Image (cartoon, rainbow, N blue to C red; front, side):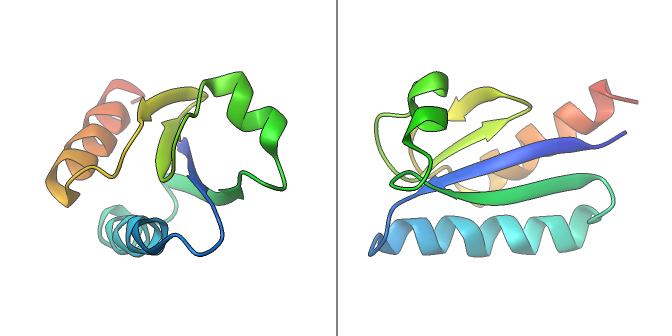
Length: 89
């Protein structure tokens, strides 16, 4: 089973770059076959951001649910990903 992760970012956002780096690292550690992720530029896909209730960047949605409305710690993000993966088995 896989989970889908969306990182909502905006151009020039330093924290957004950090969020993507952390997620990329976690995906490599946990397994890229278990997590599909994509970067969503809110300027290019504003409708998707509004649909999920994104109010700031970076925000992270997992399986169509806004889970983090700000940059979480790497530990919190890892815990959330591992928890969802264990529930999806």
